[in-house]
Length: 313
Image 1 (cartoon, rainbow, N blue to C red):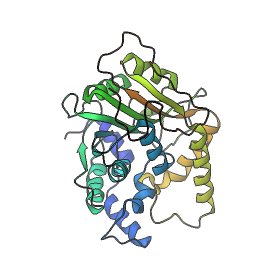
Image 2 (tube, rainbow, N blue to C red):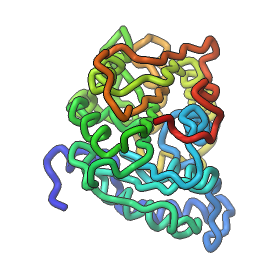
Image 3 (tube, one colour):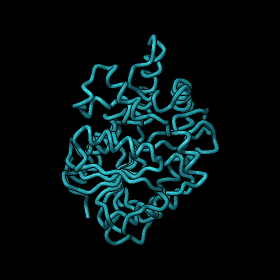
């Protein structure tokens, strides 16, 4: 696949030569059996999003994902969330990512964890998805839209590959009321590759694309708590752990995390979980048909049905 300048820029930010070998060596240093890797052994590095596996499972419950459905994980990186959805729920997951090295290493880690029959990787762009119309029962995004400027096209593509009656589950960093943000951050070292929009703009965009809102939850408070704990632990440590996000982010790891604390404390970013349906017949109204605003910032299963129920049609 020929890479554009944009793709090459992102590959330079996210990619690292020898990443697979570094992860395997980190597992060895952590005392893990490299011949029998468990999914949770990889959790320090393959959940490249705020609050890790905990947040992945919260979003899965909020979205009501169930065994056997076909899920597209857009910008799924090394495949940590995909392996969680496959291993804990029984979904069939396709990971789409623009960074070729992530796909290559993700395939290897998936094979090592015995999930190669349930998780596959595809190197490609979220703005030109290599899938037929209405291929997936659910589309999943976790911290994958921040580098994408053409968000209208992104959600057009998501809607195209999502079956009628399917569901979009999203966990994204968005722009806060006090922009601009402090750089570097985990997804960008400067403003040239960071494209955040405020939550109200994304909400209006999705409604305008004829998605119907099921849930919209601001989880900025638990996100800030998580970052504060990680920064405190890093400051107290004599050396980085053998396996962690520093293997992906390099020397900028510490300032990136400190800036995330500042960005959240100062209202420069917001962290949102949302669930949206692609109705079989688009409504003529752009107003969401179902809106949920729980008092608790941590999401609970949607009132549309118990966790594990099928997406509503």
